[in-house]
Image 1 (spheres, each protein chain N blue to C red):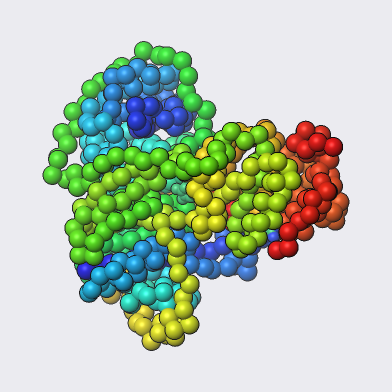
Image 2 (cartoon, helix red, strand yellow):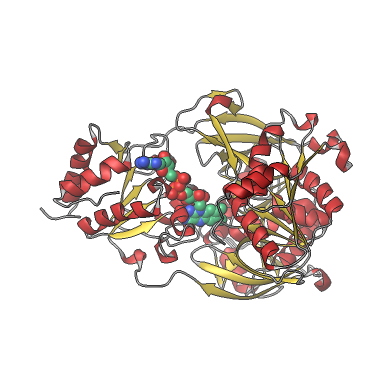
Length: 322
Length: 264
Ligand SMILES: Cc1cc2nc3c(=O)[nH]c(=O)nc-3n(C[C@H](O)[C@H](O)[C@H](O)COP(=O)(O)OP(=O)(O)OC[C@H]3O[C@@H](n4cnc5c(N)ncnc54)[C@H](O)[C@@H]3O)c2cc1C
């Protein structure tokens, strides 16, 4: 089974998921003694190709089109390369940019698409494991087709290492410029401001379990008591209850404190992406099946409105009325 | 200007649940408006309020039960709604991306909108692919994971921010007609007012079956089959503190003292 995987880069850097895709692709190709093709589109493709030449990669295709990601270019380039390589499986990252071109490529090539894979196997039939209902259940889907497209969740496969001497091939995708109807005009950093949660040693982090804006005072009081920094999951920021620079997660900040106390946070994959590197993780959540407990070192399965005031009192503080 | 909003009803699983075959048993499911779609509705209604002659239409693939969810959109200012359902879709469990895109494309071709808004993903299946598949299917331009939208009603270019990973946003100009998939936080979704809720009762929800939109049951055919659904083996090796809240808090306090988080 031959595999074509598409690398990802941004602002001159290959992103980790590129090397993870190489591992996932190699596993699949191995299942049937096939070839692994990796492709990189845009930017310093020559330099990228050198770095993508890791163990298990047979061919690196470079497509020298543009500096940064543009989905119109990517969609055309991947489709053209697909026709050239004719792989059985097309792998793309389930990143924000992956979400912006993979469905279009699959549609254009009439390939069945399965997104956000956390495991892929093949014994002739491709079966893909993915999650449903916010990680509460896992599902396996089988793809009964000769060819398929799959997007791969970042962080699930170890990155491919080493060097290999892969065949590097330049590919001219012959981009139709009239079909490029979107223009990337720049980038913007968000979430600067007063506090840098990435520097904190102890984070008290609050999620949707807190229910109301007024109740934030309760976790703020706990953070004060512990001399910790307050952070949060995304809905708290979406609601405007805390500023963007407090958001932990995929689209927020990546943090590595010594202690991370997750209060009323379910542990959705995009949140976990930002905090799994914490040394000690404590969860306070009423739901014993919440995915945060897969990560937590310590847990209290109880109502935060009972536990947090008691915790403040345990340190001699006075909890605010909420 | 016409704006079409893809609105879906999602199932949420209760804390304790059981699995029945290849699905979570029905009694443990609660249905609600998809979180991301709430923001898409707000984005559409804001454009409608900013311009004259802007019509906002919602489209939902869902059984009759989903009308309750559809009415929430109507109560927030959506002008009218289309609901597509068919016996052929019944019992399909999880509809494939292709099937959804084909159905929405058929509706979009009838309605001929200038702009289509959809949520980034639905929070049950979390495929995250419907909006962009639809765009490609109908030849519209698109942008995924939009958390800022600047568009004059009637304008022909949408300036958007796409929220990338790690606190970086991409600034992109997208030619209309386009499909945008909307990220939470782009705006503040309104609550439906009592007046809105009353008005919603008299707004139209047009039920359509596959034949009405020029499709047949073959649209549901998919090479993708769900073969297993299970609770993931818990990887949890967390030490769970037990007792009353006070006792639990005391144990955690001891731990935090041991770790040197707090002195004394
Ligand atoms: C492209 C993309 C990017 C994203 N980026 C991020 C990101 O950077 N960061 C992020 O956090 N999310 C991100 N998300 C959103 C993510 O998918 C989740 O929606 C979000 O993390 C959920 O936040 P939560 O855990 O606070 O809320 P929920 O998932 O609603 O969880 C609330 C939890 O509180 C518990 N609870 C309720 N009441 C109580 C109580 N009284 N006491 C104790 N516990 C209680 C519940 O059991 C539940 O587990 C992103 C999503 C997408 C699609």
